[in-house]
Length: 500
Image (tube, rainbow, N blue to C red; front, side, top):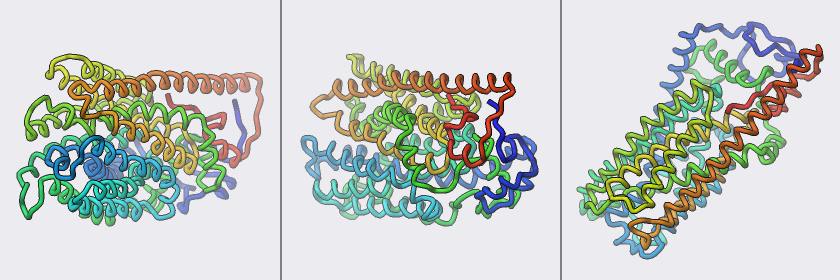
């Protein structure tokens, strides 16, 4: 449909209308945005990548390492020393996940207020302190209390960083960046086993067991990285001093008009929060998120325990490394081609298929070698699909605050599947773990149900909007919308097209 609005069209221009000037939220002057060649633009994005991605990836690597190293610590004597009999170990795991999930949704609302360059390093520092405290726990209740505090402290990092990246990168450049960032978590799985193998030789030093050294050393590294991040991270494109004024203007312009002819809504209003709660996308994507995160957390927390295949502890720790290396490579390939093709769902379905194969092998009576081979499929599929799940919803929510709230709900509520994954692998179910693998297959089935359903709905809405536009053009009709009206409509605007 053809729309007449009081602003410039979405195509590139070096001047803007008075209406655009009046409504422009950025402090930058966007009247003369530079025209960049493809090579110049590529160089600019590389400059931004080099400033943001290494420190964000390192922070998340440590976050994932610190939450999942309890599986390695269990192999190094934690279970015996703290008397983690029965379901105590599972309870310690879930007492991280519940506060983590509950505290995630509100965190994105405070990120812009407290500034990313202060908020993200601050929570990084907080959980580093908690990890050090965890090294000295002497009883089971102390361990549970420390895990609760760790969940609260870490809750703001992942949704905060993903939302932060959506403020910098256009939507079809997003998954590769989330892939780079989340790839750190994949590497954390490999590092966790390798570090635990090395740290195991420190057992008895200074009167501490090997599991205490795992928590202590990784907590100290986390604190060091928090201080580095305080000086390296920047806030937003329009205030980034490492960019020239023209570069800042280009980034703001490029992002602002990425998915709208009139720019995104950037002002906070309570209606954006309610719009996220009422949007059908958020709730269907939560189920898709759960279908990937359940298998991902299940395999992450229990890989050192489930798939030792009778080997001694050092060998079991080392066996966890190859699947994560393979998963990192798969993740980057998926992310690259997903952005290139501007499609998310095929790669999510590919990841679900890999999880289906892996869990089917492991729930069977196949020999140990085949089951270890199956773990490669599980780790590769869940980790490689995850950035696509997160970026897919981010691509299809328009308006900065609606997207921030929607993605926080998506991640926060969706992570309850991780809470389920922490209690489904019980020691009495060894060695086949039929209950655990069976429930993971249930999560995969949820994904196979809702991914095609969401694609169908998106295609139908896009086709309806295309048809309405063609019909209006044929009839010579014009519909009058103001700039503000189209901005407030966001992803419900007639010129918005959903990413598949």
